[in-house]
Length: 215
Image (cartoon, rainbow, N blue to C red):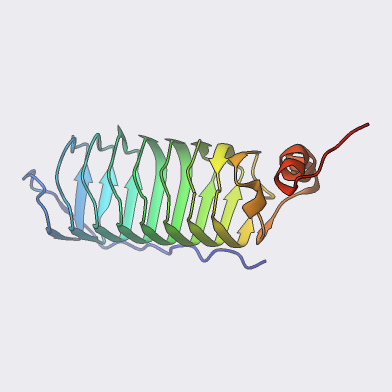
């Protein structure tokens, strides 16, 4: 079992964002966004390099096909953030509270998600490589059709995960504080689970294999 390679961020001293509105295809280098309401902002196709977001509101922000590289997001929150087909590389997301975030078709490489609560996270058809979920709560995350390689869940609660048609390789679920899979238990090949988790998942695994259990 190969463990995820985590991001090693050492951000240079950033320049505070000047308060101007974000716009599509923007280029943001070494900027700090602090305490801003970025609701419904359109940053489609934009690049954020060596940036930080702290305590920002992200309701309905449009970051489709954006690139977030060497970037840290702390205490951000909102509903309906659109990061479909975005690239997140060497990114830390800490203590976020996001609902319905759209990352379908996104590419996540060396990403650390620590703390916070993510409801209805859409990662359909996404590609996750070297990703660690740590100490967070994931409510009904959707990994359908996604590819997960060197992904670990440590001390986090995963409730109602959808793994249908997902491809897993070196995915470590053993340290999850809670693990509930609503669909796709037949796609767990390539993952490692604990003995206790196996017992909890046994009915779903038997059903997926067409095994009838009778006393």
